[in-house]
Image (cartoon, rainbow, N blue to C red):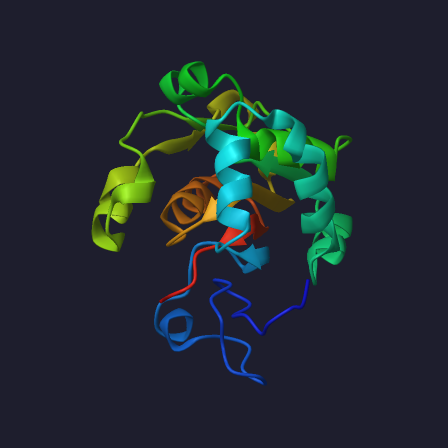
Length: 197
């Protein structure tokens, strides 16, 4: 797995020597840093479809191992106080039977994972078929921090885990909720990132 240069803020490909893309310089995302293992392309699209939609949670261990080996992820894990999987809505969790992001997070840092802090409070249409503007609108207000447990986030370094990042809308909205609750630093990690055509 050969690493390609990626924006440290959103993980989109950038030319060698560039650390942050123009879009992130103009409008930084809600998270501080973003890391991914692979581009969302063949053969990973097929593998992730099997993991997410064809009831094959057994792939989590291998995918988490590849993610942990991606540039920067081991350091981010070592610095994180808390590891939070991006939550699914209750309806989506019922349909799928498991949360792929949670399975990855459990394998990345079983001693620091928290399932009880970040919640998906609104079900929305699947993001995969929506254009960027609709994705942003689709997840607005979809995440919240449990008010009774928000103090656990105060001044903490959080690693926010997802399986696939397309535009970053879901991770960004979740990061806004974490930031509002007092998280000091948020690193988003995803196994795969959709790159521009």
